[in-house]
Image 1 (cartoon, rainbow, N blue to C red):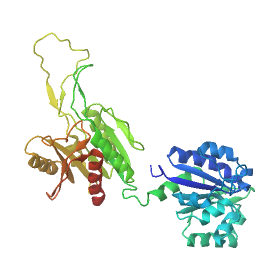
Image 2 (image 1 turned 30 degrees about the horizontal axis):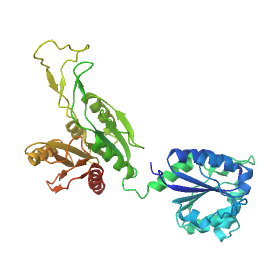
Image 3 (image 1 turned 45 degrees about the horizontal axis):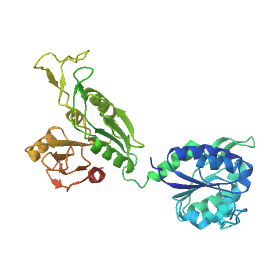
Length: 398
């Protein structure tokens, strides 16, 4: 989520712990980060450049230039293109060089050229870690604005037990994610979004449904995720590609959507119900296809549970609940009534009278009404832009 598209340079030093970097690279690549690896010559004795190049899908750089071609490995460009530089495992030797401005290899040249955040994860034996000179270098690096990923405790290569081992790949990954999310306004928030239509079965072939495409809800889920939220999307039947890094639960009927929303509602900080849920469902569902025999055909229907009202009745003070209203007449009055009756923080009104708005379009035109009755009208925009407008209000209220 938070690391997707980030350019992360991993500077690998000569430590037995270098083997852990292979697993870390796999985790970063899986998180859609772009990984570039710089190694000291000493590091290549512990893990091969070929291994890390294969996993990162980028060439591993070791020297200032390519010996065969004379091509320069531009340390300035490497550093300036990085979103983060991670020195791991950071040996006592490299930490001393970094702290005191020594520059005798490509790795330290990249470090000295950095304008992005630099994180370092030490790895060394217990007594080396505790030595006053090492601790002095750690303090000096921190005073420069570099970020320490603390070493773990456990059995060390020497056989001693204590502090100094490189943090596990999963721990480093978690640290990077949390560090990356610090600047995102919805970091640490859980969001629940519903999208799409529901289908209410008549028989195994036919159903009652509507024309909702799910595009608006999917755009909101994507925008909330990009703002740092941990998003769960409850989706009715759609032909849309599932949004990346969003946990998606696929449902069909209104009853299934209610069940899924109730399950995830309590833990959610932000709830946006944009699904077009069927208002009625057949009392009985035929187990076999109903054959076309009679000129007239009647189905007994019953009301479905009102999902938004159900959640509104359970809403806690620290939760933000947003609903949608698609109206064809008395739009503002109907939307305001729903806002109050369903205990919403604000409601997004779509009017079927507006060309380019509503179902099965790539655009939408909305009016947002808050609890105080204030209204904000927005012009016709793409649904992605409408999602940004809605989420901007959510950020302001969160």
